[in-house]
Each structure stands twice: as C-alpha cells, then as structure tokens.
Length: 335
Image (tube, rainbow, N blue to C red; front, side):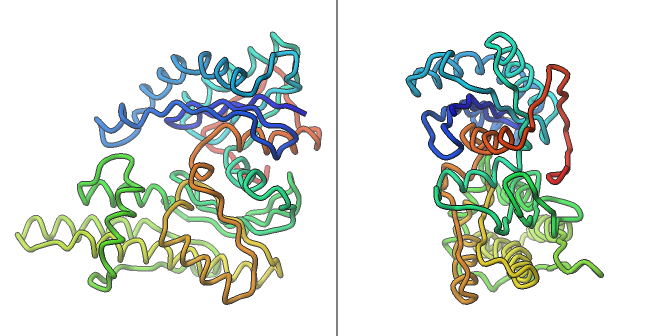
C-alpha cells in the first residue's frame, strides 16, 4: 500500500511516499529555517504562507522521486494536529483537495504519533508494545505504545516542552536559530559542573516533568553575568543545561520501563537528536538490559515519511476521515 503523506505543523513543509508503513519511497522537505532565523524563532503567519508556496511543487517532486503516478497512490495521510494552527491548516487543506480530486481515502495523523512511527522506518522489525520518549519543540511525553494506534500517556511536562527550553537557552546564549544543533555543539566543548541548575519534581506524579524553572534559571544566569560584567562560561552553561534536561528525562523514562515491564524504548522527536541525551539513554538502557531504538538524525526532525508510516497503521485500524476533518492546535496523543 502506497501512501502520499504531508507534514506542515511548524516551519517545514514535507511530502513523502511510504509503502506499507515501513519503506520510504521518497521524502522531501522544504525548510524555512533561514527565513525564521531573521526573527530568532518561527513567525506563524510567515510559516503558513511559505507552506502555501511550497506544497504543490513538493508533492510533484515526491511523486517523481518515488516513481509513482497518482493512480499508484492508495491513500493520502496528513498531520491534522497538533501544531501552529495556520500551518497545519495549509497541509490539511491541500491533502483534502488531493484526496478528493484523486478519490483516495484521507487519513488523519497526530504529529507526535508520527514522530514515534519514525522508528518503524528506522527499525523495520520493531513492533509494539514498547515505550516511547517523545521530545520535541512542542511536546515532551512518555508514552506506552500498546499497539500501533493504542497509545497511553504515562508522563508529560506540566509546562514547557524540552525543545522549547532548548530554543530559549540557545537564544540567550547568542546562538543562531534553530538552536538545537549549535547548543549541542557548544555543550561538547565543556564537561560542565560549573553551574547549579534546578531539577523539578511533581508531587504525586513521579513520571511528570517541569522545565519552566530550568529555562528561567538559564535566562537569569545569562542576564546576571551581562549586568554585572562577570564572565559567562557559555560552553559550561550549555553543558550543564543539557545535563539538567537529560537528568529530567532519562531517569523518568527508565522508571516508566520498570513500572510497565516493557523491554524496548524508542526515542522520537527533534530533541532526540541531542548527543548528550542519546548517550545518556544508551548508557541507561545498557545498564538496565533494555533495547533502545534511536532513529537517525534525519528522522528525528519533522518529515513526511513519519506521517506516512503512522498513516498506514491508522488506515488498517479504520481511522479515516471525510472532507469535514478539522485542524487542531492542541490534541492529546491518546484520543
């Protein structure tokens, strides 16, 4: 089964053709990073307009690279939630028009489910049940993947997402947008241990997280150094900050493995590309004797292939939609 898939939840327009949820026939992305770098972050209205400009040509390119004509496409999958509402609407509206014009089923896909499904592309033998640590700019979740479309949230951030915290820290440290990779590279220049940063616990919810205090602490340290004229060890702060984020994530997901008895952990989302977090997950899983699936970096960020992968299993579960399908800025992964 060949699925044409679209992703437009933030600042990257993506189209892909995926076969049977596991094989990527094409995966093309139009990045807007250079545009939004001028503003230090994503400008929603500009993102929506750029999606409109790019999506038709990307569709043609995706089909061409896959060697497919429209008659060979069996269904159309698209991110319908969550994300920047204007951006999501562009992809959804275009996918609706394609599905309607080509008389193909329309498959709604939750963006975070798509991130988790990127592991099916990287590890074709992977099957549920397993645990997933979904960490991105807008979401931080510990998810029990009981089946391909049966997911339960075990833990989540109570405020900021880990990725949003990384973006803010990078900006405060004067790093270019998007800040995840530059901050990772800066952190590699130090062993840390210079700055004491907070790590939160949520009473009565041992798997839940909070990152707002950590973000505020980094901002205050940087501003205090600037205002007093004291030197700021940027590399050490980047490393200590990264260690603090990892220190919130890794112990909790390992506790979730213990509580559920799962023996496989999959990482997902843009923050899963961070080298410190990847190394800490590897060390923890090795110590616990659990299997760890870390998708390649190209599958950690937003892409169309992950939507096509999850779309296949949504279709098998009967989760298709009509032309009245709406977009949502927020949506629980287990709904």
